[in-house]
Length: 534
Ligand code: HEM
Image (cartoon, rainbow, N blue to C red; front, side, top):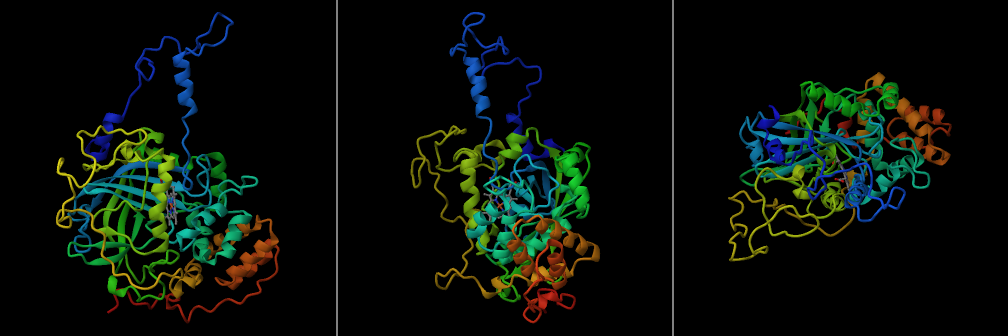
């Protein structure tokens, strides 16, 4: 597909300005006679405030920067399409997942998490993998990562986690690195991080290319079909080139030689017409089977083993067009896990619930007020109207006198039979119980899947993980924190913890490896029957 067949690219065309060969003017359209000398009184006299061109030029420059994203600041994006190859009609009424062959324009932004906007790209970190689907029913944002689990279980800890992983406040170091006291102090004192840390220490955290990365929605979402029947789902995207990583020494060297390595790789491959493709699929669990597993399916620190719950792939993601302007598109794009379409719904995953608040809130600041949805890259391709009005930098000129509901003058109230007419209706989940803060008991099991991950690694992969631990924890200045980390990871693997203790100069771990095998049949997946169990 070239750009002209893509409805979103078409929509962007009127906003694209080619300044080649044009004469400079002010923002008011006045031709500029002199762009090198400000207006002065006499040859050696003072500069005059009257010089409107000087004032306009400098003022605009002074306001060029907007806040970088509070996380995922370093990112790169491209346009493309999603093509459905298997109908998912049986499971969801989402319009773009009904008819095989349906193509939906998409925009994907890849990112690192911790580093600032100018940091090196091949660092050890999680990678963001956010997809905006411009569907005919509105924008659907799949705001995922390249690792299937997360550091924490509840959104209330997110600010703490990010404060711990970002450069330390007193000296603003280290930039984009997992090797520092606050991160490991947080890890040891918030042990639900164990599983994610195993992934972070693995080669998955130093991908070879954005084109060679897995993607995961991480949270449990819902598909809801036309009959109102729901399934729990987890999204997966797999690169057709396979998932590949750098090794640590390569990553280090590349960071020095070419801090733009990943964006350059994506840009150049798209420019050369090379294929950037992924398959999109879901794992699905029936509502009635919510409690069938030895982990809580709403716990974002746990994955659903694919041996138990296979992935059903249904469509192909293709990236085929670079942006025209990184600021206008890549920086101003606003992803939000709360942007869903009919047939896709949320669950009570306590991490997801916090995200539903956070993204809009931060974008109101980052993009300067409530009208950022009117920025070209953020507009849906389908019509949109509501009763919102005014606010900084309003772009649309809404005609008429009515901007309220209910009204009789404009006759534009939502239909009362919204379900039939495609209006979004939230899934009518049954809720019961008391207001409490604790989650189910299995949320406390922090080590079963961490150990499962470790046990699934090949000897080479294990060596890389051991070396990563030694490097990252070895940089921690506080002996107490190093000791706490060693004592924590004995719960994943005793030999790993012992080797780490020796390498980072602390006492051998005191605790005994917890026996989780009895409570966690998932530790041995080989003979596990596939879901749905028969
Ligand atoms: C970006 C909050 C967890 C994936 C962001 C941003 C915020 C945020 C405030 C910046 C958004 C912007 O400025 O436009 C949170 C909170 C979380 C959380 C509060 C947990 C409670 C996660 C998880 C994932 C994730 C679990 C992966 C599934 C992303 C991605 C971006 C992002 C990919 C970058 C989006 C882009 O490219 O613009 N997050 N996040 N986040 N987050 Fe999260």
